[in-house]
Length: 52
Image (tube, rainbow, N blue to C red):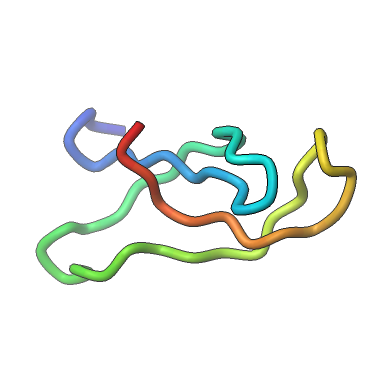
């Protein structure tokens, strides 16, 4: 993966960065929101793209 396509996904409950993903920034301009498992919260939560 190229570095300019990488995004960080952070849990909305505990604010920890749990996942890395890639996206095409020319086609998708909105922030990505996915339901993923957070190992610190021990449940599925919404993970949103962050700048941190």
